[in-house]
Amino acid sequence: MPRLLPLGLIALALALTYAFGLHRLLSFEALARHHEALAALVAADPLAAAALYLAAYIAVVALSLPGGAVMTLAGGFLFGPWLGAGLAVSGASLGACLLFLAARSALAPLVAARAAPLLDRLRPGLERDGFFCLLSLRLVPVVPFWLLNLVPALVGMRLLPYAAATVLGIVPGAAVYAGIGAGLGGILARGETPDLSAILSPGILLPLLGLAALSLLGAWWRRRRGTEGHG
Image (cartoon, rainbow, N blue to C red; front, side):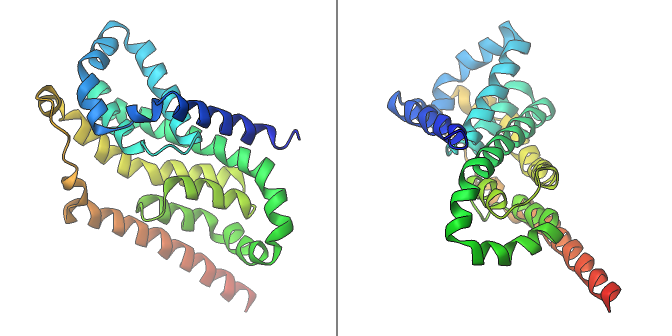
């Protein structure tokens, strides 16, 4: 039972979030509707607003709510591109680490008993190249963020490389989203929904794909050096 307590608390918080409709605030429409009140809160007390934003981002990620993009855009809009990106990276990383620790303490023993052969095949690769593999997946968001928070915990990845790959992998995307968010003032003032088509443009996606390829190249090179050393 003590092992299940962290996940029980997350499940309870998630249920309350949906029961009170708080998840509806994590949308572009809600950001456009409440942007004036949010900007006024930041102007009145920037430190308190930054702390509230950081706590909210941690909760969103720890509860695996679908709102990371909106939160990062809001950070750029409210705090500017640099501070907004920094707060977003901090919140996302801390929330991911909390979920990682909760999953490792509660889910890992349950899953290990039922999927030991699969985990035994994945564990050596993550122990050897887990940092580079996770970094490449973080850089290009083709796998859901919440899933990448859980899988490394279930296969026994250590916290330090997990946290390092998470932080480094989040930075480029957060910088892009926060930069776009910083320029949303006029769009939000008109009550329009932000257009994120720019994020899907080749000028942004290609550099992220390049970074992911470099991280995979690092994993391949490390594996090759290890093979040559044993040869």
